[in-house]
Length: 169
Ligand code: FES
Ligand code: FES
Image (cartoon, rainbow, N blue to C red; front, side, top):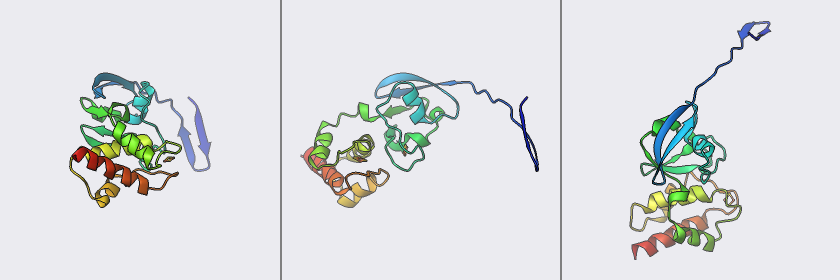
């Protein structure tokens, strides 16, 4: 067995072999079996399964690019252990029909590199699902966990406000 040593003692370096687990859940309305290591994040497990609509960024809960809905609640998929969502319905940007929101985001100049766009769409839809027209502060609060390094945030808030007004009729 390999060992490493130093002036303060010895550390035995044993190989830890983890077995994959199966997690059955719904993703965008389809039953999916994710095979992943017990410590895998939902983000990693989705992407390793080929469900790559949700991008990975910081993988530390800081950027919001990996935002998904778990049973309707907006979360950072990189912070969620995949095993904890067994039996849940996960909605990714791929499963959200948001052509009006995406058009409003483009119209307001909020899509440049586009890396943040999936997360903004999911967070915005989580807010818009509540119905009605939110205040600008409510929109800002709903989007507070999503970072954009390209565009600033005024256009994003405006896009969500426009869609909320349109959907409210
Ligand atoms: S990748 Fe999850 S918050 Fe950045
Ligand atoms: S458009 Fe580039 S990070 Fe938002």
